[in-house]
Structure formats: C-alpha cells, structure tokens
Image (cartoon, rainbow over all chains, first blue to last red; front, side, top):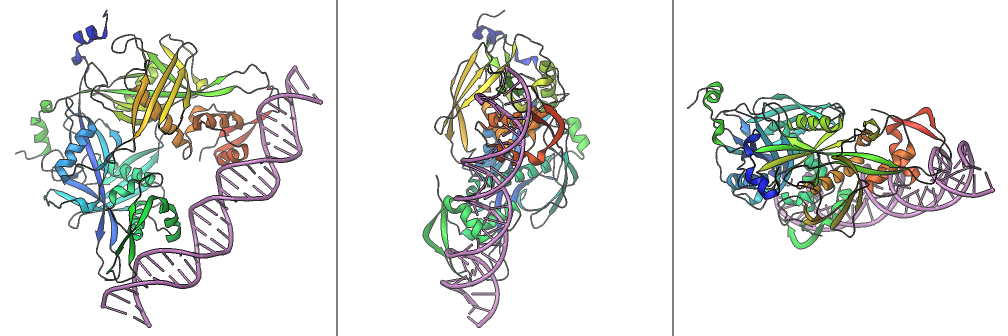
Length: 273
Length: 273
DNA sequence: CCAATAGTGTCTGTGAGACAGTATAAG
DNA sequence: CTTATACTGTCTCACAGACACTATTGG
C-alpha cells in the first residue's frame, strides 16, 4: 500500500472522520476574606469561584465558568485554558490542573462540543479587581446532608445560585458515582458538575500535596492557613494536630502580624522541598 | 439580536470554529498467572496490559493501546471506549474509568487528534482467548530506580518493550509532575505516558476503593487477593496487616481450594456494601 | 480586666508494622 | 518428614484526637 510513513501522510485524507469542536472550561477557585463586625475576630474565610454571565444564547443571562473554544491548529487545551485565564483575570502564573473531560451529547444545544475542564487556584490578593460587570466571584457553601445529595450555594452578594446534585452508585463498569443534577436554574451547561468535581479534587489533594499554597499569599499566619484547610475540608480542625501536619511544609519568618485585638501571630512562608 | 434560544439556534453557524478529531484509547489491565515449576508453589501473578499491533501508518508495526475515533454525532467518549472494548475483547460488562485527556499538538503525525484515555479492568478468566495475532497481553514490570525515572518493561513472551520515563517537577502553574519519555521504540503515540498514568491511578485507588474486585474471579483465596495487591503496589505486604485491611470487603464461603501441595485455603467472595 | 486568638505540653486510644507461632495439605 | 502456604495471636511504636494550659495583644 504505502512504503513509508512520509508517503502515507502525503496521501492521507484527514476529512474521513467527522470532526467536532472542543472547549476548555476553567474552575477558578480562591479564598475570600469576610471582615467581621467584632473588631477582635479574625476575618471569616470562604472558598469562592469565578463565574461569567453569559450575554448571548445559549443559556443567555445565566452564569457559567470562564471558557473558550480550542484553536486546534495552534494550541493545546492547557494553552487554551491559560489564554482564557489571562483574558479573564489578567494573570498568567496560575496553578492549573486538568480535571475531567465532559462530553454529554446534549451539553451544548448548538452542536456537539466536548469540553475539558481545568481547576485553577489563585491567591485572591494577586488579583487586580477590574470589575467587569459580567464577571463575579461567588462564595461557596456546601451542604452534604445525608449520604447521596450535595447542595451547593453560590453567592456573590447580589445573586444566589442554588445547586442540588445527587451522587448515585453506578453499575460497576464505570466510575463509582454518577452525578445527576437535581436542581440548577442559573448555572449554564453541565458546569454544576464541574464545580462539584473540582471541589472534591481539591479536597482530596489537600492531604497529599502542597496545592494550598497556591491560594495563599507569600506570608501568612498559621491561623489563616488553618482556616483555609477548614473551609476546603468543610470541618473544624484541632490546633495541635493541624500544626503537626503542616510543620514541615512551612517555615517561620521574623515578621509578625499585629493590631488584631489579640495576641500577635508569627508569619510563616511556604517551604519548598 | 435574537429574541429566544430557538431563534438563536436556527441561525447558528456551527462552522465558525475550526474542528478536530477525537479518539478514545483504552488501557485494559488485568492480572496474569504464571505457573511455577515447583508443584508446591503458587502461580506468580503479574499485571498485564492489552496491546494492539498497528498494521498501517502512522507507527506501522509498533504496538499501541486499543482505541478508535469518536463518532461525534452519535456517541460519547465512554460509548466509544465500550465499542472498542467490545470489538477487541468481545466483553461489554467491564469496569471503565476516564483517565486523562492527551492533546499534544504533534501526538499524531496525520493531523490534530485529541485523545481521552480510559482505564479498564477485567478478570482474565472471563476472556475467551480469541488469539488474533495482532492483539496480545503484555506482562508489566515496573522499576522505580532513584526518585525521578520510571522504567517499564512489557513482555508478551515473544517481544519485549522497554520504556523509560522521567518524572520532572514542573513550574507551579500546572500539575506537580511532568512526564517526559526518555526511551520508547516500540509503543506508538504517547501511549507510554498513558500506561504510566493508568498504573499510578489504579495503585492510588486501591487503598480507598474496591476496584480490585473487578480483576478477580467470583471466588478467590486471600493469598491470591494479596498477590494482586502486591503486584499493583509493587511491594510485599505482611499477612496479618493485609487481612485486617480487607476483612470487611470480603466474606468467607464454604468452598475450599485443595490439591496445591500445601494447606488448603478458604475461598472468599467480594462483599458489596 | 475582658475577649479573642496564638501557641504548647501531654495523655490516650487506635491501628499499622513486625514477628512468632500453629495448622494442614501433597508428595 | 519436608515444603510451602494458610491462618492467628500479640507486642510495640507512631501518631491522630482530645483537652488543658499559658501567652499576648487592643480596647
């Protein structure tokens, strides 16, 4: 037939397979600080996610994750994700990790679109708040009532998005769980599933990686770091246990944080290994 | 512009974005038993992977993972993976899990192809050995010499495939590790990376899921199960510790395995929760 | 002094790792 | 009796969970 790879490629007809469009969607997460009225209290921390308001069909006026179509001839999906992040946040040095590829047949009413979702983490302080009115940070609250329903509440101060997702056991030929959206009126596409999967990924990785520090400023107190752990894991931790766990990941500096209405705390820094 | 989603879709031109082809590749893993010459000894277990010999360009005469092009108008990537599995092994009830999406610009010399890789697990006993001569099971040996180089050796009894991959730390904007193929002369595309990523996935999941039982027959001895654990984790386990760990995952049956040249062992069964 | 957080010392119970020992089949 | 595996009892050491205690600031 053909005698060499060169010859094969010369006559290869790449149109023989039907093609499709791909997008990269980004779940950009960070931690927000909410000042408390009591001057003594530390600011409360919450996980937050960046959403974009759609200004055109499909899903007009609903919120969605920032994303964009892949340019197949020039960029990888990761390149594409970075390009979108740059456009949306003006930052280019952000932690980025591939999450999952979503490919339901009807996820986009326009046509078949396969989307690879990425999780991105960022320190909120690095962001220059260029307040585009179609982009907004939503604080995340997760309720895992019972065993198989997860409720997620997203709140940007003006609008509240309620999501309810069922975690069902699937047949053994696939992943352990299937996620079925039960309630979701304001989040476009299948992005509710991406939010849930991304939060779970970060929660799992917290224990065996150093990803937290991508959401932290250079200098931080152990109290702040503990709050971030607590908000990601969604449970209170005991001080001594927490300090044992992160002891070898951080190093104490000579700086102190004062003026908080209580004992000052030492500032720590991430110690790379 | 448009007054409703219906109207929008009616005039939507889906050709405005450049399109591309996608494939689903499957890393089908199972455990093989190798009879020992000493009649007393139990058969040795090894992880093994199903490879297909390419009979056309590109990568003619090299081995690759079974895979196929996605038909975008009718199937999901998982459907596509199942279709390929059915064709290659004639089985349809197989554990299947999405692994990672590979999208390097030059991974296929023909054109831009993005591939979503799946891991599939199967009990070798369920396979009817229809010995197609272009399909073969390769036993896997992994060496993790030092800290950042992984050597994988694949052996089907006639041919040996040696792969060497470097695990390098990447910049913090992405995943912790970057995998760089150092040596690989017989495995097509970027499939060496898929093999490594899949083995690591299974190894990690062994501890917090019940996936092993997808590779086990209905009845098995604890010795056999332990051997499978050992071969996946690539290290010896202590009997009492192992039995404590899996105690609540299995249930003893009345059946026994005899005739092995040593004390008979009870047959166990997976206990679903 | 009070309120709130920072930071440390120490007890205890659980559980993995380790080793030793008993049991039982085939040849 | 030997060999190889099956299976169990128990000790120890590390470590997470828990609690209590001291320290230090602003108001």
